[in-house]
Image (tube, rainbow, N blue to C red; front, side, top):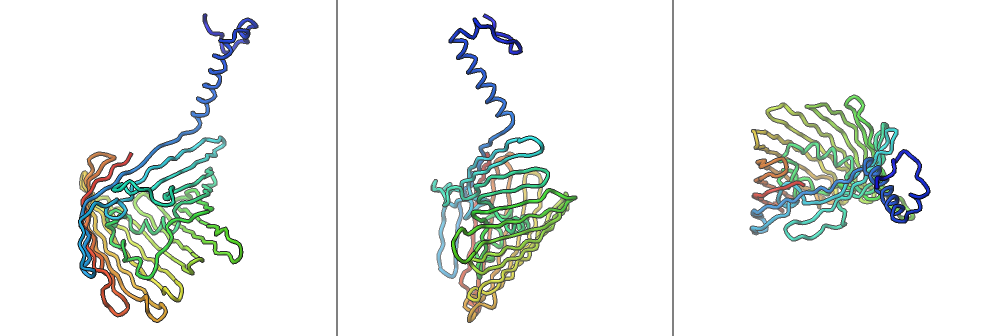
Length: 348
C-alpha cells in the first residue's frame, strides 16, 4: 500500500489502522528529531600527547628518565571534550563546551573532572556571553606573548619556575561570567568576573583584556585581580608573522602581597616553519623583589629549543630542550634543571 501524501488529509480508514498509527507517530518523531539536528551540532574532540625523556636537577642532584604526560614534558596536556552549538535564529546561537584533562601516561583524570572547561554561551552580533569555568582573558594575552616560544608548551622558556619565582596567576576562573566583544575593525575586548560565592567579605576575581589583530600582527593588554591572594597581574603581549618566521614577546608584572613581593617577567620567542618542520626557540627572565624581609626575592631565567614534524594534519612528532635556573635572594641556586624529551601528539 502506498503511504498517504504528506500534503493531503488522512482518511478515516487510514487513521483507524493501529499499525499505521504507530508508523505515523514514529515518522513524525523522526522528522522532528531530524529538524532539530539540522539546527544544532555536537562534536567529540580530543588530543593525546606523550613523550619520553630525561629531567635533571643539578641542585637536587637528581636525574630521572621517564614517560611524560604532555603537560609535564611535551606540547600540551592530553584531553577529550564535547562542544556544540545550536542556531536559535535571528543571528543568535547557544553553545556549550565540556573538556576533561587527563594524564595519558597513567590514564588518571585530572581534578576537577572538566578541568579544561565547563561552560555555556550565548552568541550573536553583540559578541558572546559565557558562564561557567574557562580560561581567563588575562591567560589569553599571556599565551599570545608565548605563542612562538617553543609552541607555548612544557618546553617554553618561561615554564616550570621562571614565571613562578614569587607566585603565579590562576589561568582559569570558576563561577565565571564573561563577555567577549565582536571584532570591531580588528579591535577586540573581553572581561571576566568570578564570583567567590561566600558570605561576608567579597573576594570576587576579575580580569579584562583589549587588543588589536590583523593577519600578520596582534597586540593586547590584560589585567587580572585575584583578591583572594591579594595579587594583581598585568600583561602586554604581541606577535608578528613575517612569513618565513614569526616572533612573539611579552612583559608581565605582578603586584603581590607583602609576603610574596612583586614580579617582573619578560619572554621572547621565535618559530621558523620549513615544510613539514617547525623550529622554535625562546628566552625568559623574571625577577621578584619587595617581599617581606626579602624571603621570596630572587631571579630566574630559562632557555628553550624545540622542533616538530607533521606526519599529517592531526599527528606530529616533536623534540624539545628546556634549561631553567632559579636563584634566591642571596644568589644561591634553588633550581638548575634540564629537560630533554621526544614525543608524539595526535589530535582527533
